[in-house]
Length: 361
Image (cartoon, rainbow, N blue to C red; front, side, top):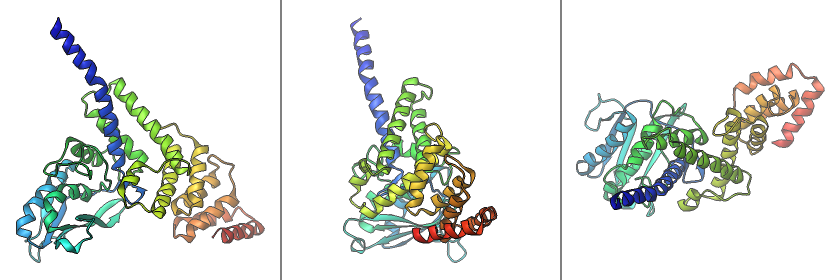
């Protein structure tokens, strides 16, 4: 009887810890969606296998460590990393260039970095990785995660964290994130508010109890609070996300850009019913704020909203106004939309809206 009591007591003590651990993992996967400079990011990822060339200092010493790290991460994504370093002139052109440099060739606060050089339709086409030759052991897995498209530096049990101590193997959370990032449910171009649903679903699924009501309630509460925080942040009255405070590189301008992007992502969330129920009025309110910030995509969508009367009264004049602003930022479909709307307007109305456009610009 005493042993049974101890067992029950132990289970009772572990349940709150598991709930807390779930919250921590939710926070970690959310933070993985923020570029440390100040912006929430859309999902970008490789469309297929990655050819890599390693060059620079002491390649023979560090080559296998780098390849092991890249292959460990890409395997979780279901992709292959193909080494073409010794392939000669007939080898395929590498999509990933890895350069090993002198320790003094990079800034003192930057031992290594990944830069995505070419993206098409949110699919990575070319990327580069630079590392000090003296930092390969500590950088390899961390940067391999960035290579795969995950740009954040969250806290938590992940090699992406600046505070995580081990650098010789991926954690279970690392594996979970990469698998979710490259899963069928995660689409290239997804907004962070869409992607966090996929990532937190993966966290719950990993418990082995995907239909556990307590776990799903914890997830729902996390996402609900997240929406509240992002609305406060986007409305200029809330705290800057902790991930940006910790980064040390987030500038005032970058954070302002992050607010604009989050306004746009909130508008899309309310339009599509992401996380919460669809709300056309709220969607239009956030979309207009992003459009007035000068975001070209938001201006294009405000033209569509005004033309169709989504969450606001339909207005040819307002539609013309927003389409014209979008066209000025080279949103090419806006040209045909302008012609369509103008055909329903008088010459006087067109001239009045053009004056509005000029005053706004």
